[in-house]
Figure 1 (cartoon, rainbow over the protein chains, first blue to last red):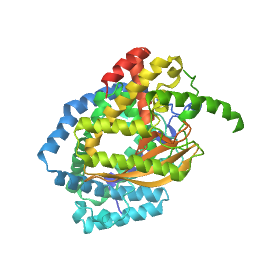
Figure 2: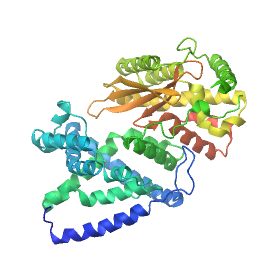
Figure 3: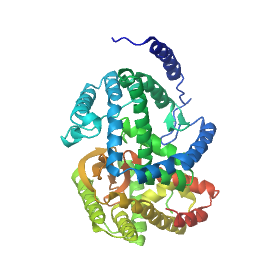
Length: 256
Length: 205
């Protein structure tokens, strides 16, 4: 295809092996869980990571996002968010193709082309103004789902937060398969990392009320973030309520 | 179907009498199999009330009490409250259940009503409706300034005897299931004591 520098070839090959090992290692419950039950065999360790993440958020991320929101005008924050989203498009296109979702991959490609050119590198979003469909925002975790890999156990990752064995594997693979990582020369590659960090801080601020309510106002912030993450992840993977949503009118309650 | 009837009727009667005590307003006439357009009509009323609150320019406490009114009128608070207790609901006396349901309704109104601030300047539009299992799902899109539009889905049923929604899913996150987790954690914290849970709930949100 294209010529990679020698230092890039090795991690890719090692990565393929790592992916296989991780995917094969996606834990599944011994017997099917009742609907609404979470598969969380690593709960004790996850709770420790959660306590760490919460401290990190309180000490660093939350104040940083408040400072960011205070120092940078909203229009610029929006532009940085768009720029970061645009940078993630090639990755989404690759995964769209891997999932056999040609429609999504094509739409993402047009969106990327329009926003990179007319949108001046992605700082503006003419694609949305022209009524083009919103990006798929897909990732390798979703590709694994399409390929039939089970979700595996729930995981809370240090710094990155809620995940699953499958989604975490996807994140690692995505780090190495991002076409931009290969297309961009070295300093620009670091800028793009910087932009995604800024975008992360921006998102922490944009969803501040939701995140604060989960982390600092719920009775059990670990259980609350696990529940919210898994529900939203299912939604993003296109799962509706058909699968395991139980009609509450069918639940057996004794009448008072 | 036929063998489900007696149980269904007794449940309806129980819930209806409960609803009558609390003073719920009937959103529709007799419950003859709900259809898609009725479900959509219900959510259209909810959405038009919500849009009214968003554009009213009211104070936070005004928005919270407006949201509680919407919730009281169009949602089956009884089944939502009861299902958040799970199997623990069985052990409750009728007074406890009533006190819990009241505390739960106000808690939800405070917790979600205060979020209406983020909706100011935005709008909600009803999109599609479809039947899923025994209920109807009405999908709406929320447009907020400077943000990608997102989906809020209402689950509507007539199994209480009235056409009411029994869940609201924001980008797939169910209010009912999320509160089931939250109430479960609160109950654990109170070592399963429902009266203490009710006391906590009155302060929460």
